[in-house]
Length: 193
Image (cartoon, rainbow, N blue to C red; front, side):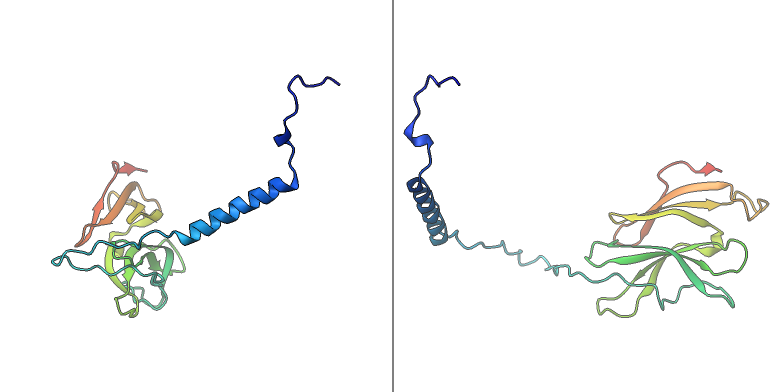
């Protein structure tokens, strides 16, 4: 074993007195930090003319059970096949967007897309907007709601001669609330299938 060329330093070996000193220093820092407190925070007050907007509260999004959808299904019931929740209008309360069609025993019934909300008084959920009308004979796929934007792919028909089993038009769409209505846009070209 080779000896170190540097002589051993006395302070490199811990002794009980070192631990007592460290504990005393830590206790002093804790005592001092509890005695010195920051000044009280004050929030800037809104100007007198600005309306006060209430703080958003977490309220569960409206469900679709018991909602009367404007869909004529005859003897069968309306069936919610897809849904997504999110704050579409920025008021801090979530809305529900539902893809609905008639629960037909055969075939592929056309889809409808509805926005469901409830009033500020937490009344019964109700339909406030129709984004896709079942009269358009559309099938909705790739349905999603992210950051206040509803996206979907709509499968439809170029003419009345196209068999209802085989949609030949594929249209990606998105809807966003502009403060007054939902605006539909097509992010890409319409594609034939």
